[in-house]
Length: 435
Image (cartoon, rainbow, N blue to C red):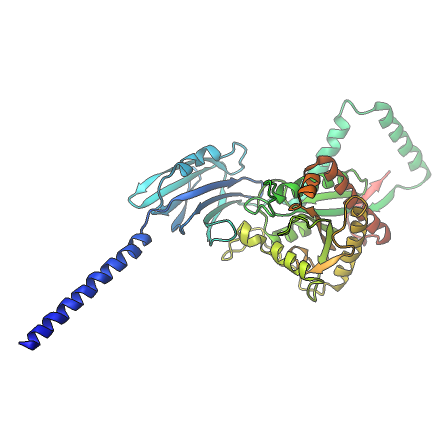
């Protein structure tokens, strides 16, 4: 009788354990198949590529397919709810977007929400997921690349040709001045042969962009906007120099990976690389401008090491597909000794720092060094300019002021010109004919 009682007690105990396990498992099961809500949708159109980002609290399972005639890209999103945020996506497509014509979204079948992108032209889609980082949650990213990547060097040449034609065609140009110039050229050509001078190309890198805002001030100013404004002013000033031209690594608000910035500089045969930033620190009283070069032997200070790590994390924030190489990244950077290039970078940095010191307080009076990924081109002297602290309210006001941005651009250009005055560029095939 006691045996039967023991068996019954054991059976009840096992049943209780089973019921408890079911109740414990159900929440886990439900969370695995829970409806996922997209909290934010962002679209970043650009000539290089267009990026679409869906952000959510939980990771999104997806599948990607390409449809022809007409060209479309379809993304099936599992267990995703059709929220007002997603419904607004169609209105966020810019008419000037080079790749996306329109967006449609709807329930494809139970548990599957289908997002369809109607394309303007053939494109190479690349989808990948990013884990939470910084202020971002889980992100599903779709990049649309052109089938044939644009040639930065050809774009630069076309840009210069267009500018020349516009100048010649401008009816407001002083006719007498043009006549005097032609007359002077004619008289010079009679005396001696035209002079050949070296054409100098400067790659200007506006830090951050797109998904990566860079530092954000307490008033909400984004570093990426400040750096682009200063970089555009610097480019305009360089392009006015008779033997110089400039190319931007990005021309709008979109993300460019750190390796790609180097590749773009090499594609235009850059003689120099200048990366423009606006520093930030946890304490608002930090102020001043700084210039950095690459270091092969560690950072020159703890602050430089901290800043390099922060800048190198830009790819984590901006979002790089680590499984598939960037379709533009066809060129492997040379693994050479960078000692000579770093020495030239230090010379350039000193000249630029000296000029900036005339318009702003210097955070450090010497060029600092650290392992900045964006400065690792083996044969292009490269510097990173921290124009001022965006986290300092007084310096933030300066950085937002167009006149002050102009002064910064003037100072950087003056430093570049002084560097070349003391370090003439090596001979290359690219020359300019002076008549």
